Length: 366
Image 1 (cartoon, rainbow, N blue to C red):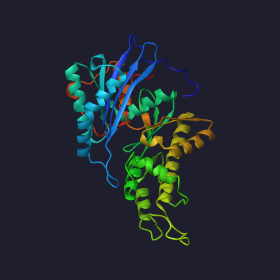
Image 2 (image 1 turned 90 degrees about the vertical axis):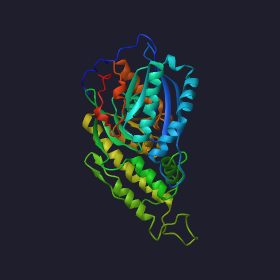
Image 3 (image 1 turned 45 degrees about the vertical axis):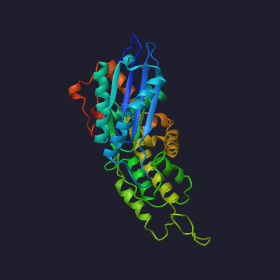
Image 4 (image 1 turned 30 degrees about the vertical axis):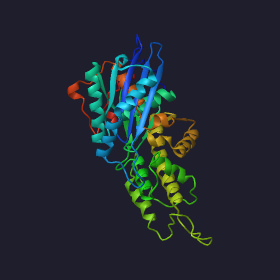
């Protein structure tokens, strides 16, 4: 907070290098990351390997099939990470895994792998909150000091600020997440899932020329996105809708898939910018950190940058290596927690699909 003295961090410099393996599998990305904390206070990403379960156009990913993908690829991804980091599992200090939130079956599959490695190599387990992993990796990469965090992904949409060893949620979606909204509309217009539906919507939106009216549903600090999704889907039944563009030269009053992608992005992102600005005003911060898979979207970063510039602020974001779900973020948050003395016992190494960001004790921050 402005005007207050900066408190000393409870996280002491390590007396020796610490290395952690992080395993992420809360949705359709399976990731293994290896991170190193050195005595001089530096943090080094040794490996960050990811494999994505991609379904055909028009289809989502089911929990059972996604879990099978993770079980099939787990050993390959982990071995690849160890090889790139040039370490063995004997060198690892702790094994970190995503405890939640996420899809039940994929979470459980990755937790089983983490438990097995923990027992085989006698390494402590650390269960990590997926959202906190995103935040901590974003802070590490961007060096943002005390930002308002906009966390936007396929399963979560939250505006977050830190206070008293807790990431407090100022606002969130009341129904579906922004990434889920984009992904579901991508399936409606039959966009490819490779590399991701959200990325392909972003590319189509760049070709859009017409801003169509959609519900603008900010409700205090919260947003509602399900009605917007229904409204944008309705346009695909409009007699003016042309999935393949104009039929002839006289076909002018039309609606294209590109127009719909453009309109959806502009409306939803404007809502997110609005509630983020409110949080900035409330806590007196001039920094915004965008994390989560949708945080890769260049248009969202641009719109947030315009708002931040008007407030003499700064926007921080990472590229797809760290925005999209990955193992290194789990390793980073897990190792911070481990250095503060936290471990997850085998009996409690379960998963929970609903694990809120503000349920985590952020013991490593002042």
